[in-house]
Picture 1 (cartoon, rainbow over the protein chains, first blue to last red):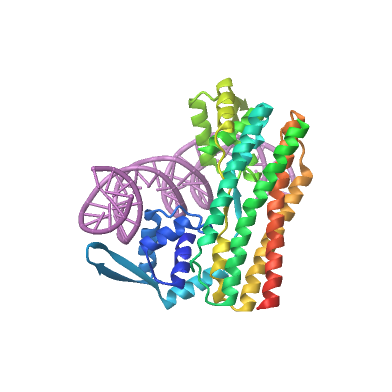
Picture 2 (picture 1 turned 120 degrees about the vertical axis):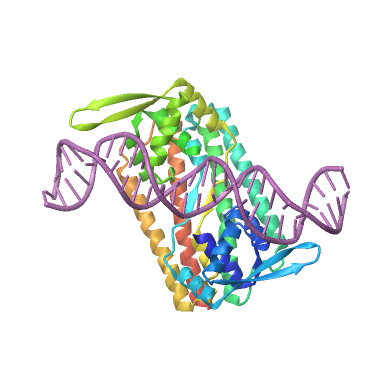
Length: 180
Length: 180
DNA sequence: CTTGTCATGTAAGAGGTTACATGATTCG
DNA sequence: CGAATCATGTAACCTCTTACATGACAAG
């Protein structure tokens, strides 16, 4: 379960509660999960049982108690092992491509409308990404220049993925209008 | 369940058996599912019950019977509706980025090795893709010039995704070696 | 007075994978 | 003689999502 390591990674930065982690994951791009309670609270139980994290209950007056999780040395070692393990290929999943593959049944106008909708959605996504990039108040760990560099490269690379997609769909729309 | 529409798409091209579909999906890039029996045979039962496909049992001597599925008019209409429905964003899922995000715990040598492994895997993927592209014996429907064009654009776009990934990781490796 | 935030958790189900099961035939 | 191909299907399990449940407080 790679989400457990994803959580362990965040805890290797600083201690968090399940609620904190949920928000970070829900708002993150590279942590591509939905950030639902079920996965997160269960993962934390597993990590705790395995001794990779410790739990501290912070009782608050008039607010529910926070359970704050801190990574252990064993946890850091497990994370390190996972980081060094064989990397997997990135997956690009797009039902839109499947739609396009059978879109020859559509009229030129309908096809054009479909591409326009896709273009819009990508554009919205890019704008959302840019807006988020604007706020960045130390939301990423910058403990060394190298770490900062790595995070920058990941963020830029992710952003370029959507820009490429936008360029591609625009060119495709133009070509279709011109040729068919 | 978008895999049902993915199957319906293939059946809109020509009739297939579950076994045929399984192989097509397993070998396909854009049909990103594993192509496991469970999903496919179940989907066919659902499509059949909904009247979107018809089933013809072809008994063969000395070989198991083939159940060949043919799309109905209702099926074509359902596919068309799905194709025109609101497109979803493409998803780029990569556990490698999560690893990289916490890779500052590694030594320069270890980090370099990690990136090299990733580069290798992408390179293998690209070679496999190119090999597959070489065989292409009318494995895609080419009923109109526009359909041919659409399929070409999808294939090229997919290929460029991995090429970008390769360029990115190579540049990242170089930069890291130079700076840190 | 409804909506949002803080904070935990559970239930139900969709979606997807690996592995098992059968059985004849063909290829190396 | 073992492995692959043809061809169907089931069982068990993992992953992930949506929705439900509780309860206090703050802000509009």
